[in-house]
Image (cartoon, rainbow, N blue to C red; front, side, top):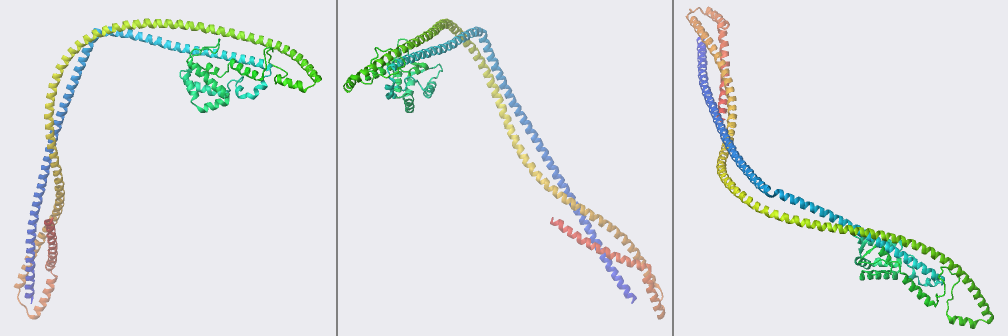
Length: 602
């Protein structure tokens, strides 16, 4: 039975040993495979490094191509700069030619021409100053004439008003005022003149037509403006009456038709233009018009004024009937009544004569005072007129002197113009010669410039062609570099993955090396224990056989001895360790197979 157990243990040991040998062989095979894979990984790493070096070489070639392209660009830029420099030199030559031509012309006639031009400009300036002074003088004369005409018109208006007041005083003595109250439309303007509203309206129209500001307007334009506005006509009918307005327009029309006519013997002359005072004078009625109106009224009432003095106030009214009315009174009254009436009329006549005498004395005194005032005013006006005549004569003298100076300046200007023409002709001849010399110089410079431009243009075209080729090569190299950079990126990613796998593999290899060293140690111990066990087994087989009882006792003791012997314990621990190592090797082998499959798949 012990032999059976020993044989069973021997078979188990042999099976374990065979299994262990198989595992060792498998581990050796895996080690060889790992070394092969490591070699492949190293080859792939070398291939990646080679590809990286090739990419670096391509990049260096691209940089060289870019440097060549930059060099070509710089050469083209230098060629353009040379062309610009040639153009600047050409411009400088043109400037030299212009300065030479200018110096030629300046040396010949510039001085004389400048002197003649300065003299002519001086004469022109003097003429302009004289013309401006004449224009100012003309304006001043027009303004002075306007003031004189306005003064004359004012004097005529005052004379008309004085005559009308005198005539009114004469008619008041005959009690004409009650008779005039029935005819207000014809006499409303007499004695009052223009109202302020009407005068302001007329002044606005006059100022609008006075473009020069000298106080005179064109009579035709004024008449057209007054007759073309219906609203203005209605306003003036309201202010001065229809008859006075129509008569004023007729006088203005007569003024236009007769440029030189007098209102009366001492009145101011009328002209084609109209001053403001003359315009206002049109609205002041003439004394002849008043006389006609009032004589008509006297004739209608059959009142004679030949024997009556001119007094402004009358206390009694004259009879308002004719001779037939007197006959009617005689037939209707008795003798006593007629006598009483005669006495009353006689007393009234005496009172009237006394009153007329008193009024005549007063009127004479008033007339003398008015005549004195009138003479004083006339004397003042005569003095003003004399001063105006003297100033006009002085201004005319100044005007004649200015005209004489203008004639002298015109003659001097004509002489300077002739001199200038002669100088211009001589200068034109010299300019023609200078232009011919300049044209010859320009032709030679143009030929040189064209040759230089043609050479520069050919060189520029060659450089442009080389530059375009370099740019094409650079574009192609840039595309290749981009593709290589993409491939390098992919290879770097793959290299990093392989390096990671290689690191993992090296770690596993180190672990397996440690395990292999440990397994070698265990194998050595196992061999030593096996030899020791074999020697012990051989010594046990050589011992003699004892009786049965002793044999059983010995078997029990040997069993206990065997089970408790340190050799058997070491063998048992070695067996357990071997099993653990074999299990670890199986696990490692399975892991290696999985990693190998994953690597092959990748």
